Length: 310
Image (cartoon, rainbow, N blue to C red; front, side, top):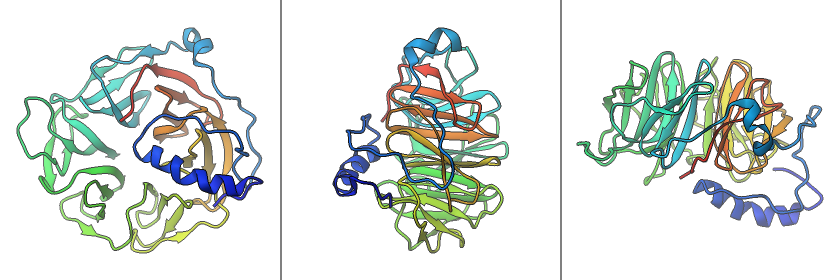
């Protein structure tokens, strides 16, 4: 947990703030917020100003049909958005386009190799159970096939490393793991975290977030231990360049030692809704804007504006 000069006020505020994040609502942190504790030099990057940089960056307005955005993914320079109305893609400077043939509600989304995995609910005009379980796509997200848990599970968080998938199920609150690309699942005894990331190098290494700070597992989620002196983190993304975290205020942090220590980088100045990372490039949804960073979260420019979170 973070220790600050106003720690008592922060502890009282933490419960309310985490509740807002859990429902993916937008907010601004109140005063009495010291910088997060780190073990490395912090960046001096200021909060980005969307209005002053739109013309320079070629940011585009969101597609009006994408009512709510739940999650993000990066493939090369393209940003994918899991929305209430299907999977969308936005290439640099281009308008958003729906990729999925069906407008299903993409509640959970992750990628392993060239395969997409998702969960959620059928869209308008679609047949099938109200909870899709785990579905997969091998054609870039256009068509999807059932894998497992149809009518049983609605994953709101999914993370992958090779054939290992981990997810948190809405409704039941179950924390689940698969080691065969989602065909079979084990329900773990540990409580489901708010968010999680699995090491791309070691599928047994899992970092997760809780209202009391990040926790770590080295046995595939069977057991977790708190990470001492770590800052409060809401969302996580792990790629080959490091483990990225975003705190409830939109401050980006990075760890190069599996979460043991964290370095503060840039900030987007608003509560985060979704984050993804690929080779040091980040996409972060906060304040109705997808912010884009090409330098590991040190600086951000607006990429897509006018988005809603849900």
